[in-house]
Length: 468
View 1 (cartoon, rainbow, N blue to C red):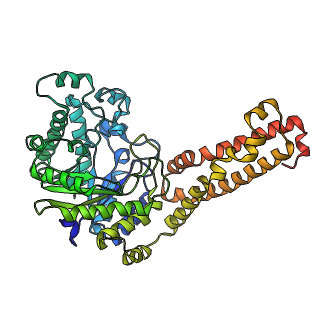
View 2 (cartoon, one colour):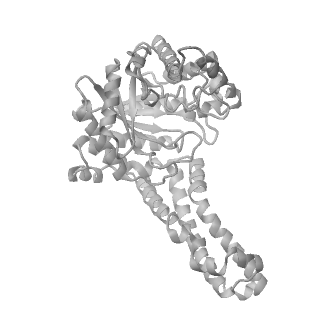
């Protein structure tokens, strides 16, 4: 298998639907990826692509989408480092950034499920093909295209699907395969040279015979994703062998260096991601010669989906990426691999921001701060019962107020430093979102406590007589 050879093809996933790097930072990341031995980029633009015409409404509003010139220059930068760019465009599931817009509501499979396209509407296929046309036109040097198709939630639950499924022999599996095959065939007709890659998860439960008869054989290369540190090697090998036995012998693996631990994680666990890559190496070593493992996409999700919160940002996950790449090169995260990670090129701003993010995250998760309302003094002398009846000890209120104020000041100083560095690398909207999601839920209760103490204590003792 290719993963066990020196020619292992490594794609790094750039998920731009959250915290899209400023263009200058993107160039620095590409330079860093090149020095770490990356062969290509799997770029998932979502609303950061400069769609035009009727699709202009798909562009981001929180910050400007990349311009056409920026998309082209990013590719030139990657090409100058010997890296290919593979665009990823969702064509079935996870189309939240498209179907959230009112003019597109009628193209949803079900009204509550914002991500899944109705596979029965010709307008839906036309929409997908126009998205692909615009993306391919702006990637003149690309020979591969990833069409997504993972996690097509609620498929078969729409009214048109229910009618279709009522016919003999019609299944949800067939419904999925029909749409993907239609899209893949249209891509091949428009761009015969294009290699089509797709996520595999919707096909995992399908029989080999179903896959053989699907029409996808020879059209697509499945990419099997598993981001867990305890990935089941035997099950994964069996899945890849099943796809191969169905005639789809050109296959991909997908691991992760961030964005797969928890939907709101701030700082990745490098060991967790290294363990995931160690398991993938075991999978590669156990595959039969018939499986042509093309390479591995090392994913780095910025969000679980378009409507979820930000995961770990790129700057704080680069050590994890470096460790994962060295694990693939050395077969394990050895002392030699650790040395290579320590030698990785640095950027003053992302290193400083990474340090600040880790420090702030540690403070935000400190039990003394996060669970301040559970401490002995607060629960013992400033409970809701005490507050409602104004039975507050001014002396202890002073202690509580002092401690809460100290924590607030320390946090605010650290947040200001994080924001200052973050806006150098990401849009202002990213810094604002990150702070509101991760910092505000911790500082708001502390702020409220200081205000409540001031109100209660003022009614018992003249406030200007208290040293608060």
